[in-house]
Length: 105
Image (tube, rainbow, N blue to C red):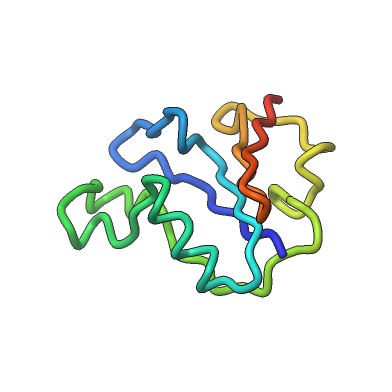
């Protein structure tokens, strides 16, 4: 299953580097495993409570509790068909086999 994490631009900016970008998709067996994987690549949760993120903008990242999807998706569309948007220009997909795929829109 694939679990999508959309980064909120808390404080007016995104963190974009070799590990994370605006959209990160993790392939995992469960949401709990996907959440654990995200923390190994630099995603953090509860940023407002930790004083990292802007309290009026909210957390940059939110844990996934969903069932996931069979294929990588962004806003209910295949990541390969999504056209991007003003704040969604790329996605990193971390596959179970350890590979990272970069999608640019």
